[in-house]
Amino acid sequence: MHVSAKPLVMKIYRAYLRSRLERYARDLQAIAEQRENDFHAERILHQAVVSVRSKLHSL
Image 1 (cartoon, helix red, strand yellow):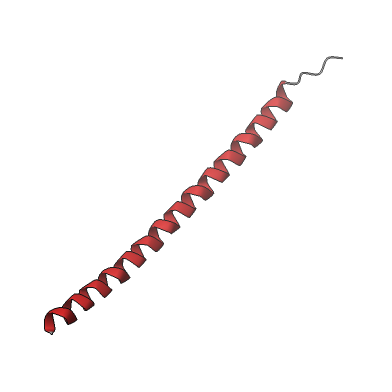
Image 2 (cartoon, rainbow, N blue to C red; image 1 turned 45 degrees about the vertical axis):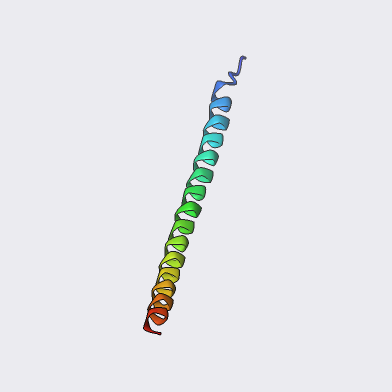
């Protein structure tokens, strides 16, 4: 009786690829969230600059 290792190797390889795919998807999600946070921070900072500039010009 001869048992081939190919099915086992393919299962392990598929699991490995799924693991990498999930990791990459999580990393992309983290990057997207960071960009969103950066966008909000930039907007708040821009509003503060406009406000201070306006107060400075009104003096």
